[in-house]
Every structure is written in structure tokens, then in C-alpha cells.
Length: 200
Figure 1 (cartoon, rainbow, N blue to C red):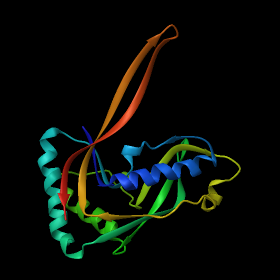
Figure 2 (cartoon, rainbow, N blue to C red):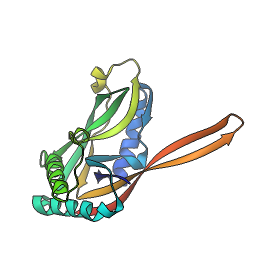
Figure 3 (cartoon, rainbow, N blue to C red):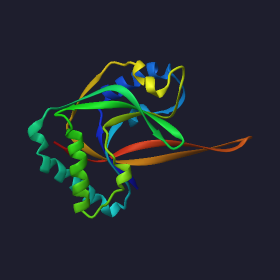
Figure 4 (spheres, rainbow, N blue to C red):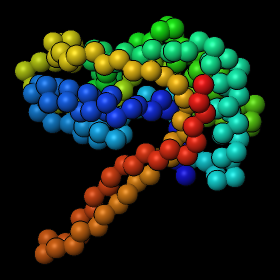
């Protein structure tokens, strides 16, 4: 199974992000846009793991909450605002930025989680965890009339939310095979399934 830790969003945040896509799409020729139910902030990407490791993964989240004493700094406020891009081999990824109060609390959670995972004997690839809090908006984006350097021209209302849990998620590939006169086609849908939530 393929897993990661995330900050989940309430429905109103997912809907606000979905609504913002209407404006963003006006400036793109194409892109693989994130499905409404898949919006989240990745805290740590673990990757492939065995079912037998789930207890250790749960423990790492619980110990992170305990070590940072997160319940004593509630409410933790977040704001989604502004756009940017990551250049990756063969694609450009479009993201929305995230700011928090207290500042850098997500960075502290990321660092502590990585330490607790190591304590549990679970080592994750560093190249997958160069942490910069963001929400993935679309992959394989091609812009229309503007370049990625002018991304700040695209505006959407800031979205405020609360952060009160670390959620362990499973990434599942749901494959549908369609057969017709043209042959066989495969459609893949990514589903993120919550496995465990460690609340503050």
C-alpha cells in the first residue's frame, strides 16, 4: 500500500478550491486538475509500506502530536493564497501556497514526523520530502497567454481554515477498463482514503 501524511480539508475548503479552478482554467490550455475530494496538504510522503507497518505509522503521528504539544497552541490557522509552479521532469505542477499561524508549524510537524518515523524504523526518501506547504492544483499544466513567471496575475479569494489533525492517507489507483470497437482503454482514478487521524 502507498501512504502519506496529510492535512485534510473540510468540505467548504474543497468547494472554495473547486470554485477557484474556474478562474485558473481560463489561463491554461491543458492540465490534469486535482479532483475536489483529493485536495490536501502533504506533510510527509512515505510511499510503499506493508500492512504490518501501520501500527508504527499511527504511533509516529501520535508521538508527533504529543512531542509538539499541539493541543496547547490551538487554534492553528491556515490560509490558502497565491499560486506558484514546480518544474518537474516532463511537466509543470501548479500549486496554491499555504501560510499558517503559528508560522512554520507545518514545517515543524514535517520535521518531527520524519524523526518519529525513523525512531519506528521507517525510513522515507528525502527527495520526496523537501517540504514546502502547498496544495496541488494541477499537474502537466500548459499556460495560455501567460508564462509561469506571471502566475501572480491569476487571482482567487484567500481561503481560511483550521488545522487540528494529522491524517494518515492511502493513495489508491482505481482502474476502469473500457472495451469497444477501437480496442481496450484504461482509465485511472486516484482515490485518497483516510486510514488514521491523530487529532490535536
